[in-house]
Length: 292
Ligand SMILES: NC(=O)c1ccc[n+]([C@@H]2O[C@H](COP(=O)([O-])OP(=O)(O)OC[C@H]3O[C@@H](n4cnc5c(N)ncnc54)[C@H](OP(=O)(O)O)[C@@H]3O)[C@@H](O)[C@H]2O)c1
Image (cartoon, rainbow, N blue to C red; front, side):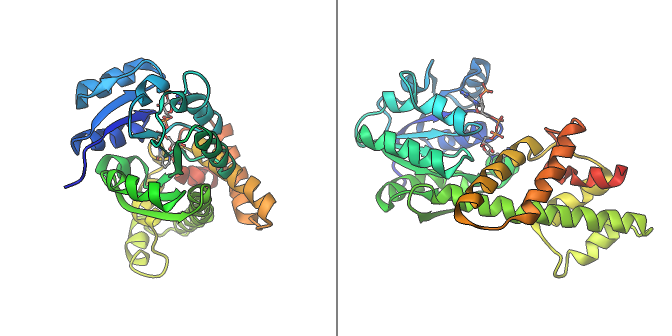
């Protein structure tokens, strides 16, 4: 049987709220912190556990501390400083960050953790809101084997795959690969479906048949029908995708990778934002084609 821990979870957004819920459901004792207190109250009302007034207070005395916030600066603000998680943690405990952030901030937080005798893993996730709710996320981890082995049985509460990719930062670099692969694919899918509509084909029938062949993808299986229906107010927000592509493009400038398609799709997403679609799903690239 898995050991039950005293844990902290910081950041109860679309992803963090259900992820922390899976930890509580598995029998771990979970203390939560969320900047907007009402969400922490709602979490405790639903799952039990406790709510703390600061990240440091939530993390105090916990063997494992999880974070899932928005971006690099959000991570710094809940982890570093007097009220930050690191300030509350005891020597030998482990911080696991599920935020999609840069490899640079992962190394920065890891160094700050090491100075205090703490351990750190960067562990961004893929699988979206549905993956978080169903406990079926993919988790890409950077760090050392020892802390990974300690965290994995706990992460498994909400993951269907969890793999150590290399040293600190390697989780974030793997997530960048994931986002680069998705960007061009969604644009290709949007172009194909828009072409089908303009050619007078029944888009859903087209998807039914081509999804059995080489064009099949997660995006086609999960997004093609809503794209054809022009429904975009759900899912993984364009604002998040632009953050992820910016991180990827910055990293590519350092490592020499060429990302012409990702850079172009990033500009298409800027157009979606200009149309007020910052919170629309990334499949809203289709909307640009429909209205041009
Ligand atoms: N949504 C997805 O489908 C998805 C999929 C894969 C990966 N991700 C990644 O997972 C991370 C979280 O995404 P999400 O969808 O859960 O976002 P979200 O719903 O916007 O939640 C963000 C969370 O971070 C907290 N937060 C943000 N800035 C903060 C700050 N400066 N100080 C303290 N707390 C702060 C928010 O607190 P408040 O409640 O006070 O705002 C909230 O709890 C992001 O890095 C995202 O790219 C998301």
